[in-house]
Image (cartoon, rainbow, N blue to C red; front, side, top):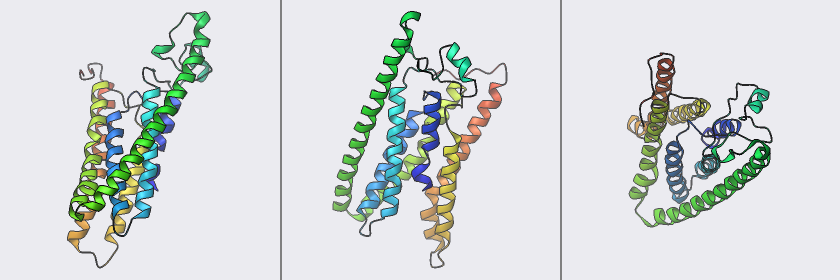
Length: 257
């Protein structure tokens, strides 16, 4: 359940800010690909892991939502969710009928409202089109992967569907860390995502250690991916804290991209 719903805070944050600025699309894309591989692996097992496949399939849907948001909100400056909506409306960045302040919304004052209304409708259409396209694509690719995993030796499907997906999940944190360092801003990433993921990983490790008949080697092998992900979340949070601390230093400037 934790893995299935972990991206929901990011979806909410993006919608409130009307922007994905500060969130690394690379993080979501790599998580999406890793999750697709894992779904196909679980579905192709002789004794199909229905719960695992369904949970990660829901996660894939959330990945599609975030990717569609990234496309629809491109060029939009984020709304400050801590600022009163009235003040944001006055300076043109609020979430009223005029919509967020985006590059595509620039227009003379008399045309601004109509232009913003059109731009908002265009963003909604773009979001829906991208979400449906991404969803159809990953479902098709997962179907193909299931067929491939069933045809190849079990060892090969384990390496690609289990190990490779775990590595992608861990490496995916690097683009988000890079985003923090180069922009000096951590407001675009929802740290509730990390909290939910760490909770899910910890619960899985506990469950793996519960069976008395499981050897230490088996526990280490199966629990290592979860421990690695927890560790990467720790590094991500530490990176964010370091950036926040340095940001208060007048001499700090974000690293050049």
